[in-house]
Length: 397
Image (cartoon, rainbow, N blue to C red; front, top):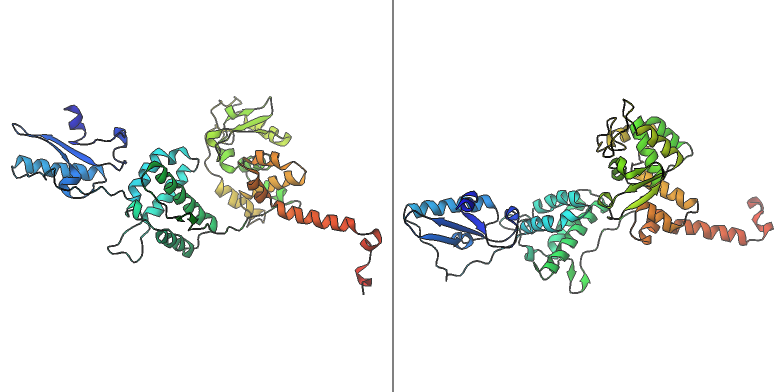
Protein backbone atom coordinates (compact mmCIF):
# COMPACT_ATOMS: atom_id res chain seq x y z
CA UNK A 1 0.00 0.00 0.00
CA UNK A 2 2.91 2.31 0.75
CA UNK A 3 4.15 1.95 -2.86
CA UNK A 4 0.73 2.92 -4.27
CA UNK A 5 0.54 6.06 -2.15
CA UNK A 6 4.02 7.11 -3.18
CA UNK A 7 3.10 6.83 -6.88
CA UNK A 8 -0.35 8.39 -6.36
CA UNK A 9 -2.08 5.36 -7.81
CA UNK A 10 -0.21 5.29 -11.12
CA UNK A 11 2.54 2.94 -12.23
CA UNK A 12 4.01 1.22 -15.28
CA UNK A 13 4.31 -2.48 -16.10
CA UNK A 14 7.51 -2.29 -18.12
CA UNK A 15 11.06 -3.38 -17.33
CA UNK A 16 12.31 0.21 -17.02
CA UNK A 17 13.55 1.42 -13.63
CA UNK A 18 11.03 3.30 -11.51
CA UNK A 19 13.11 6.50 -11.71
CA UNK A 20 12.93 6.30 -15.52
CA UNK A 21 9.13 5.96 -15.71
CA UNK A 22 8.54 9.68 -16.39
CA UNK A 23 10.83 9.42 -19.45
CA UNK A 24 10.15 5.94 -20.87
CA UNK A 25 7.50 5.61 -23.63
CA UNK A 26 5.43 2.78 -22.06
CA UNK A 27 1.82 3.13 -20.86
CA UNK A 28 0.65 4.27 -17.42
CA UNK A 29 -1.71 2.11 -15.31
CA UNK A 30 -4.20 3.08 -12.58
CA UNK A 31 -4.54 1.19 -9.28
CA UNK A 32 -7.26 2.02 -6.71
CA UNK A 33 -9.25 0.19 -4.02
CA UNK A 34 -12.32 2.06 -2.85
CA UNK A 35 -13.56 1.52 0.72
CA UNK A 36 -15.89 -1.50 0.68
CA UNK A 37 -15.72 -1.38 -3.10
CA UNK A 38 -14.05 -3.24 -5.96
CA UNK A 39 -10.33 -3.05 -6.72
CA UNK A 40 -9.66 -1.18 -9.98
CA UNK A 41 -6.58 -1.94 -12.12
CA UNK A 42 -6.92 -0.10 -15.41
CA UNK A 43 -4.91 1.09 -18.41
CA UNK A 44 -5.07 4.88 -18.46
CA UNK A 45 -4.48 4.91 -22.22
CA UNK A 46 -7.61 2.80 -22.69
CA UNK A 47 -9.70 4.90 -20.31
CA UNK A 48 -8.85 8.29 -21.85
CA UNK A 49 -8.62 7.05 -25.45
CA UNK A 50 -5.10 8.29 -26.12
CA UNK A 51 -1.51 7.68 -25.07
CA UNK A 52 -0.40 9.56 -21.96
CA UNK A 53 3.25 10.67 -22.03
CA UNK A 54 3.87 12.56 -18.80
CA UNK A 55 3.50 11.43 -15.21
CA UNK A 56 1.72 14.65 -14.24
CA UNK A 57 -1.01 13.98 -16.83
CA UNK A 58 -1.31 10.38 -15.62
CA UNK A 59 -1.74 11.56 -12.00
CA UNK A 60 -4.39 14.10 -13.05
CA UNK A 61 -6.36 11.46 -14.99
CA UNK A 62 -6.04 9.03 -12.07
CA UNK A 63 -7.51 11.62 -9.69
CA UNK A 64 -10.39 12.25 -12.10
CA UNK A 65 -11.19 8.52 -12.21
CA UNK A 66 -10.91 8.19 -8.39
CA UNK A 67 -13.39 11.03 -7.96
CA UNK A 68 -15.81 9.36 -10.37
CA UNK A 69 -15.47 6.05 -8.48
CA UNK A 70 -16.16 7.70 -5.12
CA UNK A 71 -19.23 9.45 -6.60
CA UNK A 72 -20.46 6.17 -8.04
CA UNK A 73 -20.51 7.41 -11.65
CA UNK A 74 -17.44 5.66 -13.05
CA UNK A 75 -17.95 3.08 -15.80
CA UNK A 76 -14.69 1.43 -16.92
CA UNK A 77 -14.07 0.89 -20.61
CA UNK A 78 -14.61 -2.82 -21.38
CA UNK A 79 -11.37 -4.72 -21.75
CA UNK A 80 -12.62 -6.15 -25.01
CA UNK A 81 -12.92 -2.68 -26.51
CA UNK A 82 -10.12 -1.96 -28.99
CA UNK A 83 -7.38 0.05 -27.30
CA UNK A 84 -5.46 2.67 -29.18
CA UNK A 85 -1.90 1.64 -29.96
CA UNK A 86 0.45 3.93 -28.03
CA UNK A 87 2.07 6.53 -30.25
CA UNK A 88 5.78 7.09 -29.64
CA UNK A 89 6.57 10.71 -30.45
CA UNK A 90 10.04 11.84 -31.41
CA UNK A 91 10.18 13.84 -28.17
CA UNK A 92 9.39 10.75 -26.07
CA UNK A 93 11.92 8.70 -28.02
CA UNK A 94 14.54 11.43 -27.53
CA UNK A 95 14.15 11.09 -23.75
CA UNK A 96 14.68 7.33 -24.01
CA UNK A 97 17.72 7.83 -26.25
CA UNK A 98 19.28 10.37 -23.85
CA UNK A 99 18.96 7.97 -20.91
CA UNK A 100 20.06 4.80 -22.68
CA UNK A 101 22.54 6.02 -25.28
CA UNK A 102 23.14 9.77 -25.38
CA UNK A 103 24.58 9.92 -21.86
CA UNK A 104 27.36 7.54 -22.97
CA UNK A 105 28.63 9.87 -25.70
CA UNK A 106 31.27 12.57 -25.34
CA UNK A 107 28.89 15.02 -27.05
CA UNK A 108 26.04 14.23 -24.63
CA UNK A 109 25.59 17.74 -23.23
CA UNK A 110 25.75 19.34 -26.67
CA UNK A 111 23.25 16.79 -27.99
CA UNK A 112 20.74 17.68 -25.26
CA UNK A 113 20.88 21.31 -26.42
CA UNK A 114 20.49 20.30 -30.07
CA UNK A 115 17.53 18.04 -29.30
CA UNK A 116 15.72 20.94 -27.61
CA UNK A 117 16.02 22.91 -30.87
CA UNK A 118 15.03 19.94 -33.03
CA UNK A 119 11.95 19.05 -30.96
CA UNK A 120 10.76 22.67 -30.90
CA UNK A 121 10.96 23.08 -34.69
CA UNK A 122 7.50 23.87 -36.08
CA UNK A 123 6.74 21.84 -39.21
CA UNK A 124 5.39 24.18 -41.94
CA UNK A 125 2.13 23.48 -43.74
CA UNK A 126 0.82 21.03 -41.11
CA UNK A 127 -2.66 21.39 -39.62
CA UNK A 128 -3.06 21.47 -36.71
CA UNK A 129 0.32 23.08 -35.98
CA UNK A 130 2.81 20.37 -35.01
CA UNK A 131 6.41 20.41 -33.87
CA UNK A 132 8.93 17.84 -34.99
CA UNK A 133 9.08 16.61 -31.39
CA UNK A 134 5.33 15.92 -31.28
CA UNK A 135 5.29 13.93 -34.51
CA UNK A 136 5.20 10.14 -34.31
CA UNK A 137 8.71 8.71 -34.58
CA UNK A 138 7.79 6.28 -37.37
CA UNK A 139 5.96 9.04 -39.29
CA UNK A 140 8.95 11.37 -39.67
CA UNK A 141 9.84 11.60 -43.35
CA UNK A 142 12.87 12.54 -45.39
CA UNK A 143 11.09 15.77 -46.27
CA UNK A 144 10.62 16.64 -42.57
CA UNK A 145 14.38 16.41 -42.02
CA UNK A 146 15.13 18.38 -45.19
CA UNK A 147 12.70 21.14 -44.17
CA UNK A 148 14.42 21.36 -40.77
CA UNK A 149 17.84 21.48 -42.45
CA UNK A 150 16.75 24.21 -44.87
CA UNK A 151 15.30 26.29 -42.01
CA UNK A 152 18.65 26.12 -40.21
CA UNK A 153 20.43 27.23 -43.39
CA UNK A 154 18.02 30.16 -43.75
CA UNK A 155 18.97 31.29 -40.24
CA UNK A 156 22.58 31.55 -41.41
CA UNK A 157 24.03 28.66 -39.44
CA UNK A 158 27.35 27.26 -40.62
CA UNK A 159 27.61 23.98 -42.52
CA UNK A 160 29.38 22.51 -39.50
CA UNK A 161 26.52 23.40 -37.12
CA UNK A 162 23.91 22.00 -39.53
CA UNK A 163 25.90 18.79 -39.97
CA UNK A 164 26.05 18.32 -36.19
CA UNK A 165 22.22 18.31 -36.16
CA UNK A 166 21.99 15.93 -39.11
CA UNK A 167 24.56 13.51 -37.67
CA UNK A 168 22.67 13.48 -34.37
CA UNK A 169 19.36 12.67 -36.05
CA UNK A 170 20.99 10.03 -38.24
CA UNK A 171 22.60 8.15 -35.35
CA UNK A 172 19.37 8.36 -33.33
CA UNK A 173 17.35 6.73 -36.11
CA UNK A 174 20.04 4.09 -36.64
CA UNK A 175 19.88 3.28 -32.92
CA UNK A 176 16.06 3.21 -33.08
CA UNK A 177 16.24 0.61 -35.89
CA UNK A 178 18.68 -1.57 -33.93
CA UNK A 179 16.43 -1.46 -30.85
CA UNK A 180 13.21 -2.15 -32.77
CA UNK A 181 11.48 1.22 -32.31
CA UNK A 182 11.23 1.76 -36.09
CA UNK A 183 11.99 -0.24 -39.23
CA UNK A 184 13.22 2.59 -41.44
CA UNK A 185 15.20 5.83 -41.32
CA UNK A 186 14.38 9.05 -43.17
CA UNK A 187 18.06 9.27 -44.08
CA UNK A 188 17.74 6.45 -46.61
CA UNK A 189 15.44 5.58 -49.50
CA UNK A 190 15.95 1.88 -49.99
CA UNK A 191 19.70 1.40 -49.74
CA UNK A 192 20.55 4.88 -51.06
CA UNK A 193 21.49 7.82 -48.83
CA UNK A 194 18.72 10.40 -49.06
CA UNK A 195 20.08 13.36 -47.04
CA UNK A 196 23.71 14.29 -47.73
CA UNK A 197 25.66 16.36 -45.26
CA UNK A 198 26.43 19.98 -46.07
CA UNK A 199 29.80 20.70 -47.64
CA UNK A 200 32.06 22.17 -44.98
CA UNK A 201 34.77 24.67 -45.86
CA UNK A 202 37.95 23.63 -44.03
CA UNK A 203 39.25 26.24 -41.61
CA UNK A 204 43.01 26.68 -42.11
CA UNK A 205 43.75 29.80 -40.09
CA UNK A 206 47.40 30.14 -39.10
CA UNK A 207 49.48 32.73 -37.25
CA UNK A 208 50.60 34.59 -40.36
CA UNK A 209 53.69 36.50 -39.23
CA UNK A 210 56.67 35.57 -37.08
CA UNK A 211 55.79 37.73 -34.07
CA UNK A 212 52.03 36.97 -34.01
CA UNK A 213 52.44 34.36 -31.28
CA UNK A 214 54.44 36.73 -29.10
CA UNK A 215 51.90 39.54 -29.60
CA UNK A 216 49.16 37.15 -28.52
CA UNK A 217 51.06 36.00 -25.42
CA UNK A 218 51.90 39.60 -24.48
CA UNK A 219 48.24 40.63 -24.78
CA UNK A 220 46.93 37.71 -22.69
CA UNK A 221 46.49 37.76 -18.91
CA UNK A 222 48.66 35.29 -16.95
CA UNK A 223 46.00 32.57 -16.81
CA UNK A 224 45.17 32.76 -20.51
CA UNK A 225 48.90 32.90 -21.34
CA UNK A 226 49.31 29.53 -19.66
CA UNK A 227 46.34 28.06 -21.53
CA UNK A 228 47.64 29.33 -24.89
CA UNK A 229 51.11 27.92 -24.22
CA UNK A 230 49.65 24.57 -23.17
CA UNK A 231 47.56 24.38 -26.36
CA UNK A 232 50.50 25.33 -28.58
CA UNK A 233 52.77 22.75 -26.95
CA UNK A 234 50.32 19.84 -26.63
CA UNK A 235 47.76 20.22 -29.48
CA UNK A 236 45.02 19.66 -26.89
CA UNK A 237 41.49 20.99 -27.20
CA UNK A 238 40.56 23.99 -25.00
CA UNK A 239 38.19 21.87 -22.90
CA UNK A 240 40.88 19.24 -22.35
CA UNK A 241 43.30 21.87 -21.02
CA UNK A 242 40.73 23.48 -18.73
CA UNK A 243 39.61 20.10 -17.33
CA UNK A 244 43.18 18.88 -16.69
CA UNK A 245 43.79 17.99 -13.02
CA UNK A 246 47.04 17.52 -11.15
CA UNK A 247 46.38 13.79 -10.86
CA UNK A 248 46.74 13.74 -14.68
CA UNK A 249 50.21 15.33 -14.61
CA UNK A 250 53.56 13.67 -13.92
CA UNK A 251 56.29 16.28 -13.53
CA UNK A 252 58.87 13.51 -12.98
CA UNK A 253 58.10 11.81 -16.30
CA UNK A 254 57.28 15.14 -17.96
CA UNK A 255 53.95 13.78 -19.19
CA UNK A 256 50.31 14.66 -18.92
CA UNK A 257 47.37 12.31 -19.49
CA UNK A 258 44.10 13.18 -21.20
CA UNK A 259 41.71 10.68 -19.66
CA UNK A 260 39.27 8.83 -21.93
CA UNK A 261 36.19 10.22 -20.15
CA UNK A 262 37.38 13.77 -20.93
CA UNK A 263 38.40 13.04 -24.51
CA UNK A 264 36.16 13.56 -27.53
CA UNK A 265 36.90 10.14 -29.09
CA UNK A 266 36.94 8.38 -25.67
CA UNK A 267 40.59 7.33 -26.04
CA UNK A 268 43.23 8.08 -23.44
CA UNK A 269 46.22 10.12 -24.64
CA UNK A 270 49.64 10.57 -23.05
CA UNK A 271 51.40 13.76 -24.13
CA UNK A 272 55.02 14.79 -23.43
CA UNK A 273 55.59 18.12 -21.69
CA UNK A 274 57.81 20.72 -23.38
CA UNK A 275 60.42 22.76 -21.52
CA UNK A 276 58.42 26.02 -21.56
CA UNK A 277 55.19 24.22 -20.51
CA UNK A 278 57.15 22.50 -17.72
CA UNK A 279 58.12 25.92 -16.33
CA UNK A 280 54.46 27.01 -16.32
CA UNK A 281 53.35 23.78 -14.60
CA UNK A 282 55.94 24.17 -11.87
CA UNK A 283 54.75 27.72 -11.18
CA UNK A 284 51.09 26.68 -11.07
CA UNK A 285 51.73 23.67 -8.81
CA UNK A 286 51.39 25.72 -5.59
CA UNK A 287 48.68 27.98 -4.20
CA UNK A 288 49.24 31.61 -3.08
CA UNK A 289 50.39 30.34 0.35
CA UNK A 290 53.12 28.25 -1.25
CA UNK A 291 51.39 24.93 -0.54
CA UNK A 292 51.10 22.24 -3.21
CA UNK A 293 47.60 22.02 -4.65
CA UNK A 294 45.77 18.70 -4.08
CA UNK A 295 45.71 16.12 -6.86
CA UNK A 296 42.04 16.88 -7.54
CA UNK A 297 42.74 20.57 -8.19
CA UNK A 298 42.63 21.89 -11.74
CA UNK A 299 45.96 22.71 -13.36
CA UNK A 300 44.57 25.71 -15.25
CA UNK A 301 41.97 26.65 -12.65
CA UNK A 302 42.03 29.74 -10.47
CA UNK A 303 44.69 30.40 -7.82
CA UNK A 304 43.04 27.87 -5.47
CA UNK A 305 42.77 25.16 -8.11
CA UNK A 306 39.04 25.57 -8.69
CA UNK A 307 37.86 24.93 -12.23
CA UNK A 308 37.66 27.74 -14.78
CA UNK A 309 35.04 26.67 -17.30
CA UNK A 310 35.78 29.19 -20.06
CA UNK A 311 38.42 31.69 -21.18
CA UNK A 312 36.39 33.05 -24.08
CA UNK A 313 36.09 36.58 -22.72
CA UNK A 314 39.82 36.87 -21.99
CA UNK A 315 40.60 35.33 -25.40
CA UNK A 316 38.42 37.85 -27.25
CA UNK A 317 40.21 40.76 -25.55
CA UNK A 318 43.68 39.31 -26.19
CA UNK A 319 43.20 38.54 -29.87
CA UNK A 320 41.82 42.04 -30.51
CA UNK A 321 44.78 43.59 -28.72
CA UNK A 322 47.13 41.42 -30.79
CA UNK A 323 45.35 42.43 -34.03
CA UNK A 324 44.20 38.83 -34.66
CA UNK A 325 40.49 39.52 -34.87
CA UNK A 326 39.66 36.56 -37.14
CA UNK A 327 41.80 34.05 -35.22
CA UNK A 328 39.85 31.71 -32.95
CA UNK A 329 40.98 29.82 -29.86
CA UNK A 330 40.48 26.47 -31.60
CA UNK A 331 42.83 27.65 -34.40
CA UNK A 332 45.75 27.22 -31.99
CA UNK A 333 45.27 23.46 -32.26
CA UNK A 334 45.53 23.60 -36.04
CA UNK A 335 48.57 25.87 -35.72
CA UNK A 336 50.58 23.49 -33.53
CA UNK A 337 49.53 20.43 -35.56
CA UNK A 338 50.80 22.17 -38.70
CA UNK A 339 54.05 23.01 -36.91
CA UNK A 340 54.57 19.35 -35.99
CA UNK A 341 53.91 18.37 -39.61
CA UNK A 342 56.28 21.03 -40.98
CA UNK A 343 58.97 19.83 -38.56
CA UNK A 344 58.81 16.42 -40.22
CA UNK A 345 56.98 14.55 -37.46
CA UNK A 346 55.34 11.44 -39.02
CA UNK A 347 51.60 11.88 -39.45
CA UNK A 348 50.84 8.85 -37.26
CA UNK A 349 52.38 10.67 -34.25
CA UNK A 350 50.68 13.96 -35.12
CA UNK A 351 47.36 12.06 -35.26
CA UNK A 352 48.05 10.54 -31.85
CA UNK A 353 48.82 13.95 -30.33
CA UNK A 354 45.61 15.38 -31.79
CA UNK A 355 43.55 12.43 -30.54
CA UNK A 356 42.12 11.61 -33.95
CA UNK A 357 40.64 8.14 -34.41
CA UNK A 358 41.97 7.73 -37.96
CA UNK A 359 44.68 9.17 -40.19
CA UNK A 360 42.27 10.46 -42.84
CA UNK A 361 40.89 12.96 -40.31
CA UNK A 362 44.42 14.16 -39.59
CA UNK A 363 45.17 14.46 -43.31
CA UNK A 364 42.17 16.74 -43.81
CA UNK A 365 43.00 18.67 -40.66
CA UNK A 366 46.55 19.40 -41.79
CA UNK A 367 45.66 19.95 -45.44
CA UNK A 368 48.18 17.32 -46.54
CA UNK A 369 47.06 17.83 -50.14
CA UNK A 370 48.33 21.43 -50.03
CA UNK A 371 51.70 20.30 -48.70
CA UNK A 372 51.84 17.70 -51.47
CA UNK A 373 51.34 20.40 -54.10
CA UNK A 374 54.23 22.42 -52.68
CA UNK A 375 56.38 19.28 -52.68
CA UNK A 376 55.44 18.65 -56.31
CA UNK A 377 56.50 22.19 -57.25
CA UNK A 378 59.77 21.73 -55.36
CA UNK A 379 60.50 18.53 -57.28
CA UNK A 380 59.73 20.32 -60.54
CA UNK A 381 62.19 23.07 -59.65
CA UNK A 382 64.85 20.52 -58.72
CA UNK A 383 64.38 18.64 -61.99
CA UNK A 384 65.18 21.70 -64.12
CA UNK A 385 68.74 22.16 -65.41
CA UNK A 386 70.69 24.66 -63.33
CA UNK A 387 71.00 27.23 -66.15
CA UNK A 388 67.23 27.25 -66.67
CA UNK A 389 66.60 27.76 -62.95
CA UNK A 390 68.80 30.88 -63.07
CA UNK A 391 67.26 32.39 -66.22
CA UNK A 392 66.25 36.01 -65.76
CA UNK A 393 62.49 36.32 -66.44
CA UNK A 394 63.19 39.71 -68.11
CA UNK A 395 65.16 37.90 -70.84
CA UNK A 396 62.45 35.30 -71.47
CA UNK A 397 61.35 37.24 -74.57
